[in-house]
Image (cartoon, rainbow, N blue to C red; front, side, top):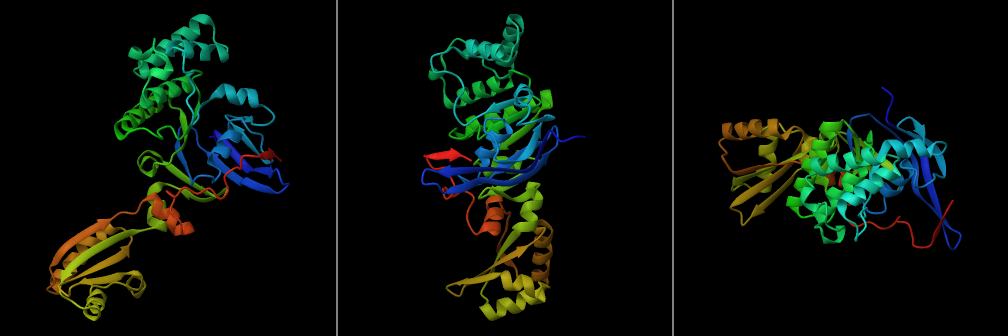
Length: 341
């Protein structure tokens, strides 16, 4: 099946007022399968929003090519826009407009007839539980309610592909959970492809079937969340035993068949000489931990405590770059005074 998004060497360069230039996105090459849910992650200024703006025809690339829904983003932007929905970081509804009126107006922008746009507005109001809000101006809604309205606006054309640029930023945990329930329900209902950016790593980990990480304008990782965490970060087992000094601890770990490479990456700490804690990096920690505890028991060492720490996507980014994905990076964000190249 032909990818719904196909980008080859897509790049965007900006020129500063002083004549210097910088690349916000460099050689983005990416295929996205129809019907998938993909998370596009990176620190602030990494190139996420610039990439989305190019793929949605809002920003012309400096070089490279891309097709979205089968149409070239530069040569045929109009049919691209007709087949996609885009929920940006800012709210789409005007502060003083009533919600149903905004949805009807959006239908008019997409060329729907009077009867069709009213029917579509009522359908989305029902699906997203907006019945109590239809006659309220957007300025009187909560953050979670406004984001549901934003998604409704993005869904007016019944898009095959929906871009969601940090849809849950700023919402409280309950509102975020409610919003995701609606997003997943819409995907199941329409079979749409979802292209998501988010600062909430747990959202990408839990919901996305594929995670792409971008840093300094370049893709540095692309796989399922589970494989990225296993291959690039790995699990950590923490075991606390009574007594033991460092020499005894290393000897004990050798006896339970940990390899020299694992031992070299393990850490051992003691507290007042009464207990020793071992932190051991492993793969498939849920399988290794029971075996390790059994081996220790055979040698007469009962664990005082044992923990299995699963890596996060932030650990993956830390492993790749030495920095945290949660940090507010601004080294390559677009300066205020820039020009398109």
